[in-house]
Amino acid sequence: ILDEYTSDEILSEIYNYDNQDFLSKLTQRGFHIPANSHTNYVTSPLAISANLNMSYFNDVKINPTLDNRNEFYNNNQIMQILKSLDYTIITMSSEYGYPEIADYHLCPTTMFVNQFHSKLIDSSILQPFSKFFVTAGEPQRERVLCKFSELSNLENSFDSPFFVFDHMMSPHPPYLFGPNGEPMNSEFLSIGAASWDNKSGYVNQVQFINKKIIETVDKLLLENDSPPIIIIQGDHGTPTQLGGGGLRWNNINDDSITERMSIFNAYYFPNIDSKIIYDGITPVNSFRLVLNNYLNGNYELLEDRMYFSTYQNQFDFTDVTSMLNSKANLSD
Image (cartoon, rainbow, N blue to C red; front, side, top):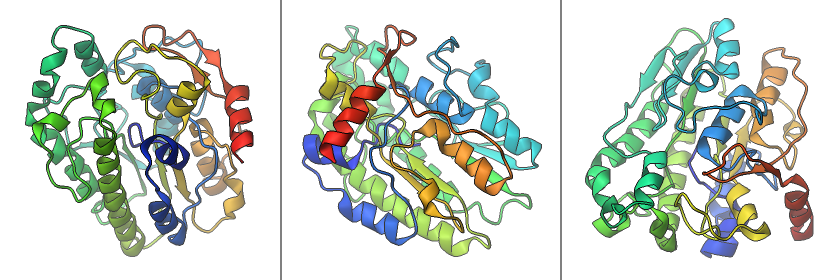
């Protein structure tokens, strides 16, 4: 799960960046990239929990920071099911904590301020000093690199089949990487609303993440005795038209909602007909497809629906499915 990795359409329209080379490399390696992919929810805690639980939870009041006491996250449905099938569960610990059900937690957190805290800082008198809360960026750089390294070197670590979950805080600000992985200067380390004014910083980080993904995918496909199942997704899109990454969004309209809910989404499903991965699929159905096609599951696919809400009122949902589908049809 790549935090705030948006769709190729948004990258082109808002960031003036053509991501087709990366998409082509994934396609050449057997990935299927469905058109018109959207998140189910617009904040990381909601989007990730819906993904891991394979369900909507509009009436479930979860902790918006997803801390370690959150049952909905800690003992999520997909990990429970896989554990019952004797899978080893591995997580790359996220800024929201880690699911307690997991057997291993790799690349532990640093002093890096998490996304929820960064939004609080951005709305306070501390905002001009936000870059100093990232401890110069180096611990978080090392953590991103740790995750890619671990993902590439797990194939001989376990006798049982294993499931790996990684929520990576990139290409989300702060902009720690140039396009080739070089460290960025301190002015790139903003984590508040102003960071979204730096579109080149976001694009640079996307380019670096793309390179690391291709390197990691190539190693996974080359070194595994049996082909792995790989899902690469953004949790939600970017907020430039909403007003940036602060707690208060001040420009809520169809275009800004479309940007925020548009995501990158790619699937590597070996040895089955890729037609099961349909255009418009949302993350709530990703693991339902996995279970049904590889593990004899019988999970009905849910209607793909998208809900908008703000950080102040995360559970006050507006169903924007029809609007997003209409815009997608017009662009087609």
